[in-house]
Length: 276
Image (cartoon, rainbow, N blue to C red):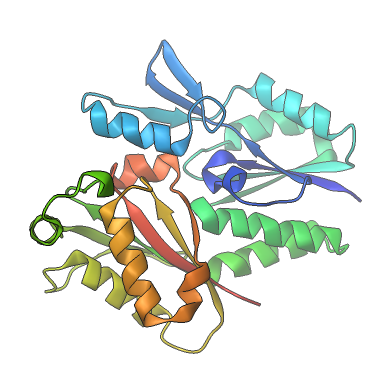
């Protein structure tokens, strides 16, 4: 059977190459009740993060789209596919909507919800799609997605401040003054704030990242950023390239909007996905 996968836009699937059998479900971004945007369609991640930086009074929220919009996507998908798999993150809770949809679509609609977000969720969906195309059951596809989640992790840096590389003056002094922030380890098993004695938060980030992938396991490394002009991003890339040549091909894509609301407007995350 042919399966169409619809995944919430916080997976960042729109920012990477993916098959036609996978499409994203936009979320609603609200700044005030009368100011709403569709994630990725009306407002990209970078536009959202810029809004946070330059409008300190913004108190945005993100929520699922209306059930009517989702029904339209499902109806279109079922014209070409035998069934639909709806994949959502806990951050965008579609469980109540799915219960209502299940009454209308029955066995032609399936549901999977996870704590994962960002590029890790996108990779999980790609693995699930591969399993279904290989003729495996939904249970086997879910197991493949769970395994992909367990074999990945990321460290999220939430700097107190950042520097635009286009406006750097006296770089070394300014950077030394600002290398402070909070660091989190996020995986399928835990999310903890990392505390150590390193004054340089970038050094701390790289050190803990290498501790996580300190063996010879083949991995796909990635970076999620809130601004491609971040001087922190430049520093991280430079240090990773010095460490190992595998970081030359590191995937770099914008961070998700819900990550920005959780960790801050200057966030950078570096992570890995173990290769099969």
